[in-house]
Image 1 (cartoon, helix red, strand yellow):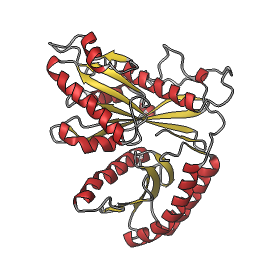
Image 2 (tube, helix red, strand yellow; image 1 turned 180 degrees about the vertical axis):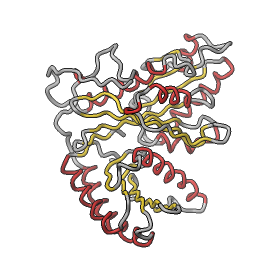
Image 3 (cartoon, chains in turn red, green; image 1 turned 60 degrees about the vertical axis):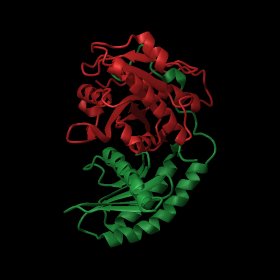
Amino acid sequence: MSIINYANKEIQFKIVYYGPALCGKTTNLSYIHSQVAPENKGDLVSLATAADRTLFFDFLPLNAVVIKGFKTKFQLYTVPGQVIYNITRQLVLRSVDGIVFVADSQWEKMEENIESFKNLEENLTKQNLSLDTVPYVLQYNKRDMPHVAPINYMEYVLNNRKVRVQSFESVASTGQNVFSTLNAISRLLLYKFTKESDLANKRSKTTVLMSTVR
Amino acid sequence: METIPFLTKEDVAALDSLLMHYLEKTSGTLTLVIDKGGTIIAQQGEIESIDIVIVSALAAGSFAATKELARRIGENEFSALYHQGVDRHIFMAALDEHTVIVTVFGDRTTIGLVRLFTVNVAAQLRTLLNQLRQRDGLEPKLVLEEDLPVVGENIFG
């Protein structure tokens, strides 16, 4: 979970990219890594098989905005999508602050998307967490492929909880909406964080301190 | 409570003091206290030459991955792990259910010595971390909603 270090003036958040096998989770992180300025990113670490399938996780640390002199650090993880690696997914979800659920837009992948989403809910429950409290956004990836399901259908099958969340049509391989997705989940986390630490001076007017990371 | 929501300057000083002392005794290169999700709680030693964020994520992953292995042989979890290299080695030990101490060391010391002093510092760290978890209340307000980038402004990109 997020931790504020008042000595180092840092806040750390953990974001997990979740979704079925080959939906584009690693591609999201690769694109982000390729676009962020070197001083604001660490190495992209991939624990993958020889065939470039995620075996354990991918990991990318990022520095983001400075708020009131505090550096915010986002640690992006992916989980292995293949069904057999469920224990690994549970391990990576540990201490998660926010989730990006990446769905594959192709018709033939719809069942896998639904299974993976259910699996996410089950794995969160095992950690006494739920999508009611953990911020998340949806990304409908591979919109450039032939035979993709219409967005309203994807919304119907995946964005059908009591509270609907933000969703993005993306092509992670070209970067389309990769940063929109990342910005949305980062904003949700910062927003939740402010709500939770909002004790006093709620109405104080302050200046937004932004650091540009690209 | 699993998480330590915040660390004050005094908390960090107390953790640093314990770790500094521990590192001196063990002649280790670097030591980290991390939670099992990979978040760094405290660090001491050669943090300039080693990417501690990545080491923390991988150490937490490595520790977690062996849990299933432990279960298969009838253990709940391995309490300590040791990876031996040629010039540098890494020792990890569970402090409690939620946190791990990671120590990188070279040929100036031995695994026996590291283990010995880890047992000592672990007890002290456990006590301190428990106090931090059970602390009530929040620090004075850090971030206001108004501080966030307004809608339309990006955090990244």
